[in-house]
Length: 206
Length: 428
Image (cartoon, rainbow over all chains, first blue to last red; front, side, top):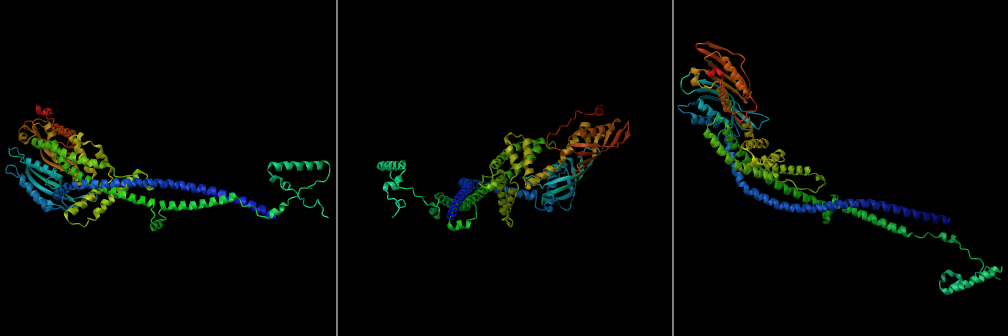
């Protein structure tokens, strides 16, 4: 009886040894793998932290330099913005501003009209402003009826075609249609006169 | 009487455990005993020592087996591994995850992942600040480029136009030289800033790809610009509204690869005036601000003065005396009405022709062909011809034709009038 107990005990001891050996091996492998991987990650992050710290140091210096550069230029930028704002208010106003446009058209007439080279605006008719969903601007359409010399007609075309210059003072416009008839085409030697009706779009900010 | 054979023999110490005697004397004594035993055995007499005692090993089986040293070591090693494993898990979890942040904070233990996260956040913030100042500058340099570019476009078109005087053309060409220098300054300044990297590497599992890092910085920059603009939304004074507009406009071209590519690829000094003209229009078409909107409208504008001039040039090719002063005397072509329709890109021309011979319709047909040969026009037609008069008085025909305006009406490469190609009937 005693022999059997001893044998059982011995066998149990052997089983324990094998079990512990197996557990140790498994645990060693698992934890070795885990620790190795985590250590790799830790080392990577640690070196990354060092690199990031260095980059942050360099960037701090660079921020100061770029800000100084920006501050030095800002005075010029503000000056340019100011000029552009002033010009935009005339060239591309924030509303249809048709009264100002009317005064400007009167002023053009005054500049162009001469005794021997007429330019007479007989009618200006403003239509309702339109705004397109797709476009970033609004349009004030209007029609003008003008009697003019050929020379002034060309000047007027140039004026509208070159309107909207940032460094100019002419409201941004374009012509959607021109209907013109020649007057005095009977063959005498007087200046050829043109009667024309022009449909113009004046633009303003949406 | 006690049986001497059953009695435990009294033996010499050397005989009790001869194995314990390891000296030479013991070995000698042992050999003596061996001789005695062998002589007794050989004579058939009874052994002096009798039979060797039997050991009752069963007595030993009542005791537990001896503890295994190997098992002890294994248990110890196992315990060591368990403790080590727990320590490893705890350490790496505390360093590489945020699971133990509350303990780390309480105990003041630094966590490498938290340090990295905060350093990365600082790096992102600093680079975003750099990008912010750079993009605000780029925006302003591009504004300047557009501003000067507008003058350049106008002067270039004037220099190419055939409806302006030669004095105006010469003036425009002079202006172009000065404007080129100004454009180069703003262009190169913007180009230099655009060519700089807008991102730095981030040590993070989420941002192993450079494209993702770039997108991250673009997003951060855009958010920062919009945030700054939002804080100025309610501002009423001029400078505040201007700053608001600047932030919004700068945000519009963050990450604009087309703009960056265009600016970096172009070598401004090597560009011709025409290429600079096209570059300005390209830049204006890419960026979004008031000036680009204005430029877009201007690009859609038709230069009717050039169209009228082209009609006159083509007419002169058919009627070399095209002028009202000669119409009554030598005949030719006279227009009485033009109708230009921008929306439909159509031109209607009404007029009359006068010839001293019968070739009135030929003159009109030649005019139609000439106009259709122009790069400005297409589909010119007049399906009905009529004339009146006589051979002695000459013939007068009515002219009523329609033309389509070509989509690609450009201001460049205007063809000069070929007035040598006068029709035969006018030379007769």
